[in-house]
Length: 411
Image (tube, rainbow, N blue to C red; front, side, top):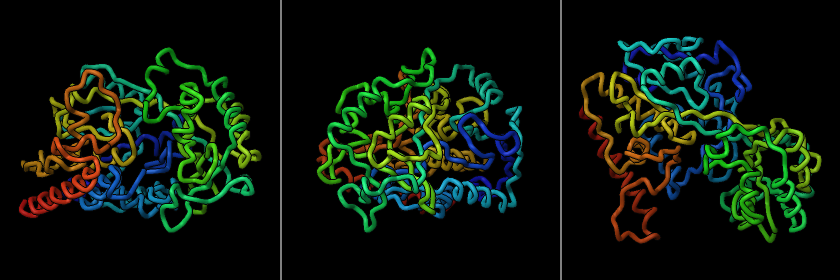
């Protein structure tokens, strides 16, 4: 969509529209979200909020689609998956410069400038082509999906609506408390639970930012109480599970931070130990799915262009972990691709969130692993106080984007 709005004729290849579902997808629709339905925080004082603000100022079509499909989630941007997918399909269908090919891309033609945004479920055929193109092996890890619960099956006499620290005007989360005895039994069952059969390299390849709930439980009895079940800001409870709306009608709720690879029958048994979920009906149970990414530090330059040939890469295949990060790298790769083809310079300044993310995934790194955007990627003065950092980053991003906008107008 960014290339089309720059005047280019675009051939979009999306195999799922014609070939059907994958092991993780439930539909054949474009842009179906398969993990969480949250794009994370929106506040400028948060790293993801600042990243979203840049995308908003730069005219991100996907961020606009997410806003249209938004469901209540406190200070986070969470979406109705179906509405989000439909909005993306509408935008593509209405573009006069985009031709959608509902089939697998069987050949990465060397004479056609190409942007590869295969996502975490790159097909075997395309993966083989990319491997041949890059001359190297893929890295990969296994990401986990959290369960979704039918709203009518939640016992609200054992739950309460409240945002953590009472932030926001409305209480967008359903909180399911556990007393100490129940929590300890819950953790014990998780530690001893049966999981889907592990692949030889699976445990080593798990992404630290999205660990399965049972893996966290095995790291210590109190790990969950200081992680996704932390009760701080939610009253005097020993532990709390938060549920977030999965769709606009609020008929479905996602178990926040409860990605899992437990066997489905085991999930039902353990999660029903929670008083508010004793009669829970699951619209979707957790599962694992493959996430494939390339060795970006070795293969890509800071514009996300393959160091040899007219190929650009974007999204999770680059090692940029997260929905907002995928959107940001997609915007940046398309922008740089258009500039390259038009003989223009890149005017996105150093210090902006998007450029910092691109530089982080392409900088030399022997132990490269997927990364979410965070304040640690942005440059700062050495003696900057911790209390001053967020305001500094907000002002830095604002100034850089003003410079960028002026440069764009001149070109």
